[in-house]
Amino acid sequence: MFDNKLTRKLPRYYRYLKEQLEYYETEFVSSEILAKLMGVSPSQIRQDFSRLGYSGFHGKGYDIREILKKVTNLLETDVKKNCILVGAGNLGQSMCKYEAIGESGFILKALFDVNPKIIGLVINGYEVLDVDHLEGYIKDNDIKAAFLCTPKNVDAALIKTLYGHGVKAFLVFSPIILEEIFKDGIPGDLIIENVHIDDNIKLLSYKIKLNGQYDSINNKNVINITL
Amino acid sequence: MFDNKLTRKLPRYYRYLKEQLEYYETEFVSSEILAKLMGVSPSQIRQDFSRLGYSGFHGKGYDIREILKKVTNLLETDVKKNCILVGAGNLGQSMCKYEAIGESGFILKALFDVNPKIIGLVINGYEVLDVDHLEGYIKDNDIKAAFLCTPKNVDAALIKTLYGHGVKAFLVFSPIILEEIFKDGIPGDLIIENVHIDDNIKLLSYKIKLNGQYDSINNKNVINITL
DNA sequence: TAGATTGTTAATCGATTAACAATC
DNA sequence: TAGATTGTTAATCGATTAACAATC
Image (cartoon, rainbow over all chains, first blue to last red; front, side, top):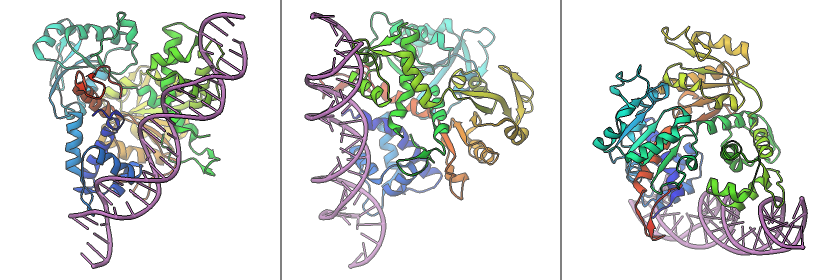
C-alpha cells in the first residue's frame, strides 16, 4: 500500500503530463514520447503506471487525463484543506499568490504577521491578521496546514506553538532542528515539508563546475547534466 | 569521476553536518549519531564518505569540518561566481536577502526589473537596474548565473535572451518548457536548476492524507512519514 | 588493554532495463 | 491485416545493508 519511492515521483509525472496536455495539446501519450520528454526510459514509465494501477491502450498510449486523475487521487490534491500563511513579508506575499497552493487542494484562509505596519493590509485579497489571534483563528477555521514564511530563527518556535493549537502540517523554507524545540520527543503526527532552496543553489554551483568538463568515462565533455 | 547520485546527497550532508557543528557544538561525529539524525543507516554514511574519499578516525568518528571541506570542494561552493537576479518583486526581494546565495559562492551583483516604479530603488544594498541594460551589464561583469524571480510566463523567453548574452546557468522557480523557446534544439551547455515548490506542496498534501492512516503492512498507524 | 567505531567485503534488496508476447 | 505500443516477466544493474576484521 505504501510505495513511497514511487509517490515521490508523482509530482514530477504530474508536471510533465500537464505539459503534454496543455502545451502539446495531446490527449494521449505513449511511454516513448513521455520518456523522451522526462529524460527517463519508456520501460520505467510503463512499470510505474502499471504499479499505479493505471492501464493504457495497446497501440495507442496512455490517456493523459486519466493518469492525472489517478495521480491527483493518490496525492489527494483534490481534497480541500484549510490553511494559513504566517509571515506576510516579501516571501509570504509572493507565496500567497502562488497558484500551486490551490492546485494542491489548499484553501488559504488568511495571512498572519507580527508587524503592526503590515497587519490590516489586504494582500491578494487576504487580510493580514495579528499573530496574537492565531489560536482562536485556528480553532474556528479547521486549519490543517500552515505555510511559514517567517524569518528562519522564529520557525521552530512557531511550529511548536501552532502544533499546540492543533496544526499538524507545515511547509517551511528553512531547515529546522525539531529536537531543539520538542525536547520531550518529536510528536509522531507532526508533518514537516521542507523547501530547500539552498540545496538547489548548491547543485547549481556543482552543475556550473561540471559544465564542459571532460568526462573520461564517456570520453566527451559533460553537457546537459542530469543529477 | 561522475557519481551524480551521490552528488545529489551532498547538500543534505552539508546541512546536517553544519547542524552538528553549530547546534550540537561537536567537532567529531560518528556514523551512528549522524545516521540517527538524518534518518538513514550508519552503513550508508560510511559507504558514502568512503566513496567521497574521506577517512574518519577509528573509534572516534569523522572530523566534521574536514567532511564539510570535502563537500564544499566537490560542489565548488567556495568558487566565486558573479550572478544577477532578474525580477525585483516580492520573490526577488526575498531571494536577494537569502544567505544561501553567498554560501554557495555566488556573488550577487545587481537586480533587474522592467517596472519603472522599482527601477532605481536600492534593495538590501543592491540597486535595481533596468532590464534594458542587461546585455551590457552581463558582458562587463562576467556574469555566470541568473536567478529568475520573474513571472512564469516570461521565464522561458528571458532564458533565451540571457543565454544569447552569455549567461549559461539559471535558477528558475517555474517549470519551463525549453523546447518551446529553443526550437532549433536546446544548447548542450545550458544549465537549468529548477525549484519546484509546487512539488513540495503536493507532497505535503500526500503526507496529510497518510498521517494516521492504518498501515496494514506494518500493522500500525502511519506516523513520521519519510518520502 | 578494552571500547568504540571505522573501512570494506559480500549479501541483499530494490529499482531499472530489456525483451517480447499480447492486443488494440 | 499491419503497425504501434502496452503490460509483464526475467535479467541486470546499482544502491543499501550486514557483518566483522582492522585499528585508533
